Image (cartoon, rainbow, N blue to C red; front, side):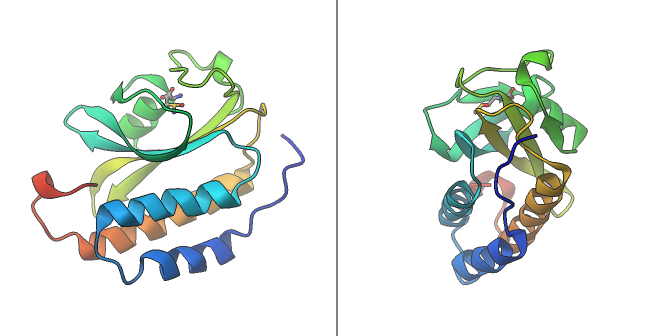
Length: 166
Ligand code: SME
């Protein structure tokens, strides 16, 4: 673990609700979710959302270097977190079997499934150039933000699945 400054996740949640609370468009809201978190979480080199499309995760809004576009479910950190429907916090990506390296600078990673209602919609993926960057407390805070984000999107997403962005 590093000496990265602690993030105020409670404040971030308020800012998130202010940013997306009155906007119905899921793409705009996902872009602002990503922008807000990327700006607030120190010592990261990539943060973005992959959206579930069939049996693949497809690249959505992100901040960082251009990344792999399609990730199979069950493979890599993102696909494994998505298929298990649980967060994966990886201290050293080089030790994770099947890790998919999009940016060689990445050394640690956290992936949180985004669940709308009962349905997996995608994942939030955050990479850091610092080994063991993410603490348990970061995990709890990021999971809380993902639940809030997913709940807000669920309230506004009443269209058929095929026409949704996320
Ligand atoms: N490392 C991820 C791939 C996505 S990039 O990090 C942006 C994985 O193993 O699934």
